[in-house]
Length: 273
Image (cartoon, rainbow, N blue to C red; front, side, top):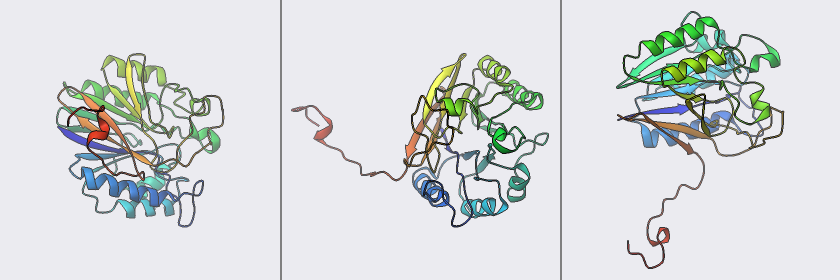
């Protein structure tokens, strides 16, 4: 069995800048320390986009420094807050598939397919995602070429509604129907970020898992159309167990009281240990 770590929505800012009073770099370092203390044997770590908050060179430089000398191979992705050119300056060895940050990584009996869903627009319109014909072709070829491996697809933006109106308005809004059809045909499991909440479900026959941010989270507000609402809840990361039967996805919060207890408190009265 192999393990894969997943961190998403890091939102690294320049020195001295925060998000709702939180320092994204401090929270990332806490997540990295927590994860590597427990899962240094992971086969890879997927960074699922929104690596920086504004796509600035100074932000990518701080991120690259934090990731320096990690013992786990990195698979970086970009999201709507990222800028491809600045990203590539900081990560010159990152994959380049027809100008997009996309890759195929085979780990044992599993195939990891990481997609670039940045839509190329600027301003508020940049926050919705897109899967164009070129990126659909990449996905199709990667799925067909899996040769029996279990396909795990990583997309910063979800291609479906998840019940939060503010975030549903900036999901993948172009190419999502064809994308989901491909995933269903090839029985892929879909992993996403972007929403800053732990969410799971299935859509059109496709099982999906969304992971929380390493920094700040979105509240469970099923009415608001404001995509900017945030809450100071613990950062988190994902741990994927790649099994012979498929994949198991765990989400681990960071910064809570992690004291572990064992003993009779967990059992009904009178039941022996």
